[in-house]
Amino acid sequence: MKVSDYSGEEKFPIKSYGFTELGLLYNPDLQPGSAAQSLKRWIHHNPQLTAALTKSGWLKGQRKFTPLQVQQIVCFLGEP
Image (cartoon, rainbow, N blue to C red):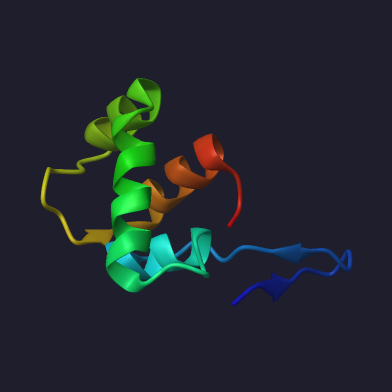
């Protein structure tokens, strides 16, 4: 799932991800529902991340993240 850049380092691709899909990237050892719940908890327990996502158009119940929202998540949580 990672892409390689010309410097030899692998880089996480910033693109649109489903909520569960992104949750599984951060929590590959969990079941899909648990991975999504874990990501949801991380978002809601980080007020700055929640605010950044809201500012970028994220709505409660949204099942897909835009590339901008994924970038915000990676900025706050690091690469999966």
